[in-house]
Image 1: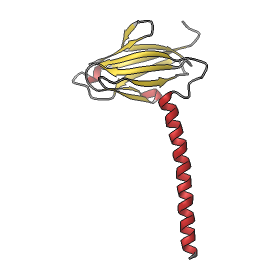
Image 2: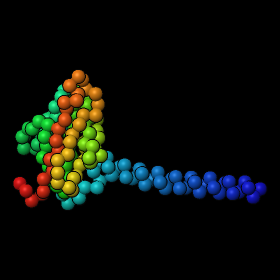
Image 3: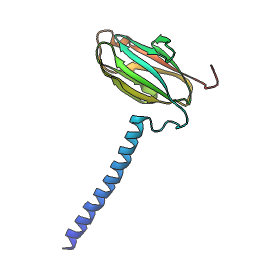
Image 4: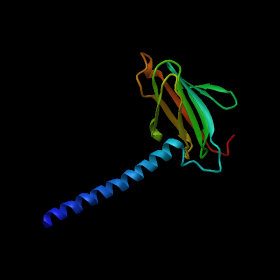
Length: 147
């Protein structure tokens, strides 16, 4: 009888621990997927990203278009509104740990804020054709005082 109660207590304790950890993970996932970690007093700038064989097209809010290179300010929130013009691609910024699919006909928001200035590589992480290996871009993060 004592053994049964110890087993029940152990199972209840394990279930409680898993429930707490699951709640924390769910909360953090929601924060990542909605940009909940962005500063509330600053509106994020939306940059459209169109993946094409074999180029990244970036369209800034003012209509300026750049290919394979996007420039953002450090510490400022951005939303990359990601889609594809042809086949499935995946935007992968290895050094920052960002990865998101780009599927034709769908738009996916990538909430991004980078605090450290530098140049970060953007790769396509989904085989998109024979020129897949050439689909490399750059995320250039400049100091917020510059420009």
